[in-house]
Length: 276
Length: 127
Image 1 (tube, each protein chain N blue to C red):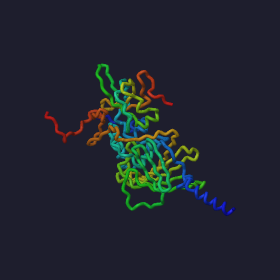
Image 2: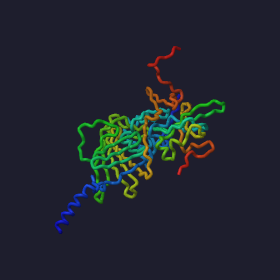
Image 3: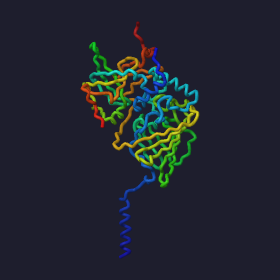
Image 4: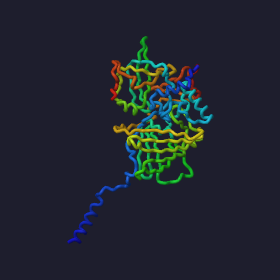
């Protein structure tokens, strides 16, 4: 009788096994990065400082002069070093300003970060791989990460290094440039606030040949509990047009408007001109 | 001769502009020193990226009219202020404080907080 019951129990368990939910991996080991994150601080790259020169970027002389020239051009209504105006992505590290929304999807081998502004998409490989011999440059870069455990043994901090960047890129909307050689390395520590789990932090260190030393900034994001999942399609209605170094404004009737007084019209030398 | 903004003023202007608006392009082409109040009739409301646009027909004192192309933040930013693609429609009468293009052409930047129906009621009640 006991033997029949034991066999019966085994058969019952075997029959039930396919019905039990399968756990592909134990996500309780990882911090809860789920949901929609939005910026909790300013859109300046260093959120605790003012715009432009007040960012106190540790530029070398060459790039400080470069930025001053950019700022002077902007002062006349120009769009110097404003590559996002042409719908180029912000790229790293500027993408982590998070102008619109951010979603982080953690899997054991890769953490994905989707940034709705310009639809930028980052992959942070956490599978223990080494740096490849060659990285095809991209605006998001190539990122390798490593999880760091907290006091409770669970993963708490994602340490990330990003290389293989493509340009042109700036630190923020005011045109603070990164070096033309695009040899930027970005190091990050991404972690939840211990006191407030709906706050996420990113400590970002930028190493770049435009700088005299690594530049560290600390950014914070907040988790949205009533998210609106937007799309940002820059080409939908972009009205900024740069023609031969001059930027013009395309109004919604399709006409070019000048952006500064006495701005010359575009050179139409390749168009058949009516006789005078 | 183009007017050059001193660097300190440019920095102050950058701080005054909502961060999301700076994401796409510099707003230095707009004259933030000299905002103007426009009153007119919406001819189109484009709830788009990278900027939402209000096309506003404004009739001048002399009876002439011009359609102003007014650029705001992105549609997704406006949603967070309670706006949608149906918030404004052709024929709505509004008044808005805008920062006009430095060139003097009929274009400028608008902000939700400075835009109202003609009777003074807010367009969207923020919570």
